[in-house]
Length: 249
Length: 351
Ligand SMILES: Nc1ncnc2c1ncn2[C@@H]1O[C@H](COP(=O)(O)OP(=O)(O)OP(=O)(O)O)[C@@H](O)[C@H]1O
Ligand SMILES: [Mg+2]
Image (cartoon, rainbow over all chains, first blue to last red; front, side, top):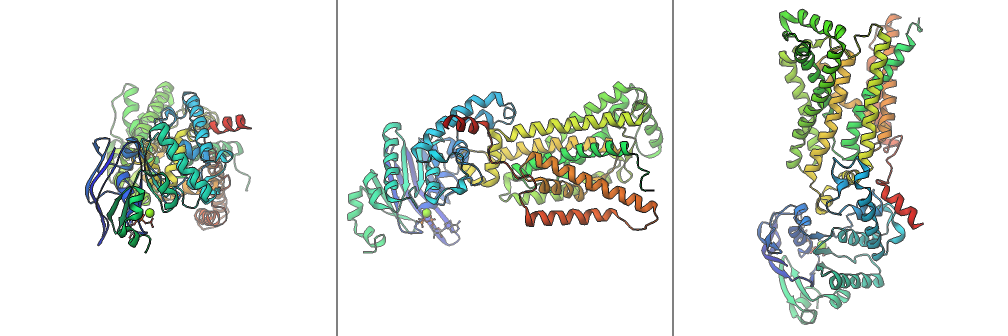
């Protein structure tokens, strides 16, 4: 479903992403791990159109989406989350969740002032958002400003917000950073559930391997901008180079 | 001595100025307060309304009245002025029609130029650069119009741009009707902006204001939306420009300097960025202050005091801006957090 061919990105002299090729098959959960600064987040930005690659190709659903802008990538069904909580902090939780909904009538400047034309639709979206917010344990926080959430709740809202964009494939950058262990596990159960029930596909960057390994179909390991290993969780856990660069053994 | 002011006329003038200022403040509040586009060139878009009026009053008005247009400047200046004032005095329907057409053309031109001005936003990553481009662009256009005589006679400006109720013999009544018209337009603009802001579109604009990168990653075409906002805001500003010039009766490039942009910024910052009611309040307070200093200046002059009290106004505005930014950056009326009614309904049903 998502295929990267030899994707690269340089910053001045630094090759942050160096000829990465990987494949994310439909309906799978793929993990992306590696030491700090190995280029994982940069790779995600290259896929999502936040940054443009210096070389290589990105294919999604058979279409070449290399150098597409961020909004085009989103509208193609590829939705990303950010490592640092990137909410609209001055808006409340519900507004954050409603923003990504596609093709809103009320977002057309010609219809927006005519509240009658979009009120029912907004109502429907709000109900959907409410359900999604329930799933990420934010049901009692609709009216709160996003800035007033705890760090973990922010990550949860970001996940919920991504789901509101009707994604086919989710690119998640450390979805459980700052989330308590029990809830982190629940988040992954939720991800697994979404994969099963809605056939969603995931590419997930995560440092909490003990949880990640329980859920992924396969893993890519990055180091200094390159993919140094790929395989099932068991294979990766046994891989000698991975043990050296990542676990420091 | 101090009481030789015609109170009624003063009140009407004040209301008219308030209505015009409100239009300006609403347009800047939409662009900067809501959408986060720092338009440092809003005077440009106001001036477009004034130049449009300059054009329609000298070219269109005679045609509507069945006369040939007379070149408004140079040797035929007096003749052209005479023709304008006769038409405005004797043919009310023609005057009103000309005025209505002026409003429409001004809004269209304002919208087009606003869209073109937003174009650098497609290229400029930092929206503050857009602000600077607009600041410089505003001055450049002003200097061009100053140098280009046929439009509003360049440096000399154009007089005799009478307001549409000029034909009514009673000047109090005609200025009262004009004030009502201005206030009605300002009221409509307020309702329009308020409904726009309290919709998913308003939510979208606020999201873009806060983090355009993330908004783009959630599927929003930031450049296009900025363009739309500039079209709407500039059209409202141009509308204000028509009322401004018709109210003073005189079109001059000297009125659309950076200081006018600064006035609008003070109104919006004082009233409360992102709050349409705040924009109205800011417009009201600044208009009052403006009139108060102007009247004081006149009174001082008649008393024989020989210094430019008008400059006190700029000092006051500067102080207000500094104090607000330091002690109450959210303004007198802070921005409301809710955007659409979906919340209210949802919250009501969940309680
Ligand atoms: N905009 C940028 N300009 C210059 N260097 C950058 C930029 N963005 C990232 N880098 C560098 O690229 C390298 C990869 O960064 P990246 O954020 O992709 O790492 P990461 O694998 O996500 O790390 P972490 O696990 O800590 O989040 C780092 O050395 C970083 O300093
Ligand atoms: Mg990272």
